[in-house]
Length: 90
Ligand SMILES: [Zn+2]
Image (cartoon, rainbow, N blue to C red):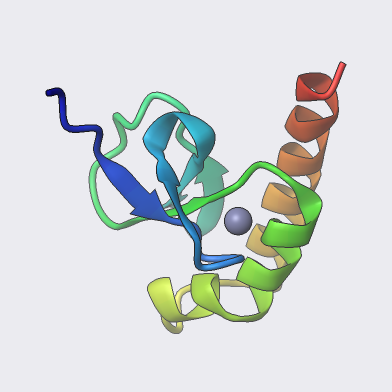
């Protein structure tokens, strides 16, 4: 049997496979999506949907990137994630 790696969504705290989550990394003080998982350093996983993202911004993400998150970074990732979730739902 093949073991599928799972990650915990920092929004809803449920586990899901990496394919179902978007990895976010901190780069130059901004949160950026890292869909291919190539960026080094600390990452956080979140479902690419607005409800999880909002929960993450208020809780899990702030903990994951303690003290390093700026308001500008949050608005950037908010925009990009909501865009990608819309295209997924087509
Ligand atoms: Zn979630």
